[in-house]
Image (cartoon, rainbow, N blue to C red; front, side):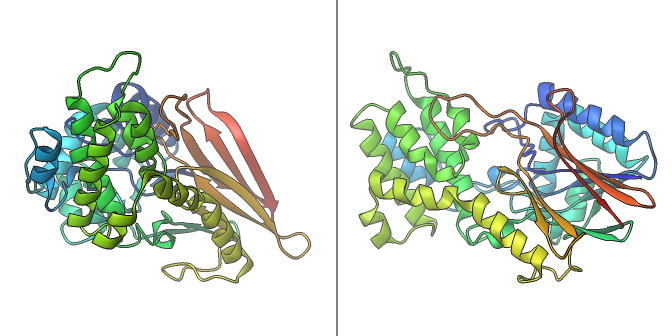
Length: 369
């Protein structure tokens, strides 16, 4: 029996910017599902943000005014029902979701909702997953498994991030603004000589606020200033910023905030190691973990905590299957990370693999009983 774990695939609708490309990544995911299915005792854990449901929800208000300010044909709208969003995601990602449906008929598949698909852990979530043809995929708020004499705790990780821990923390607002305002604005721009603008790159940026310095590179002077004014007003209208904060916001101040946000992966790692040491409580109160696995930050991390002699514990952050970017034009990180954990009577083994490169081993951990 082996436990396979992936996170942050961000499968979305066809009308939105693409984070998961089914003709490419979908076939890799189908290969993974086929590998898991080879043994009926195997399990695939989908560790959050598998579906990008927040991206399908537009800002509550302000789109019409944003469009008028920038001469873009936009208008306020309501989100479609959750089952309809899930059906649209299924239609846009047939390779990946056909494979997932087939696997769930043969082996255990568990979804742990993250901040982008939290809706599936709430009222109506089961029905929405069923509407996507996945009635045999289980839903758990966290996955806790016992292998050998070790506790494996798998959480998405967003509950340690104040902007994403709740629906009103700000993260969902920024996602909605990027998908339904910023990207349509960029797609509406006339081509600019000697500057290539890639609107879909916006959703690959981490942290998301990095859109400000990136657009400073892409847009002509004057257009950028108009955009910033409309962008900040939209954030104020939807509660992401106070009016006073928007008045003080400048590109230089936003860049200073980016440094703090970009350290999220490092703060998550420190918190995880404190949890392995027993000095920090985990959300949901699971047993003290020997292996703690998170997603959310989109940064691969791997740290071994050495306790008393002969005792080692492991922290893994799975990164993401969506391309990751931090600038306007540099190469995208296209790693497809997978964690495999298995055990026999005497040893537990964990491997972090990149299945975009012939299942190349990135890290390996072994610990005996």
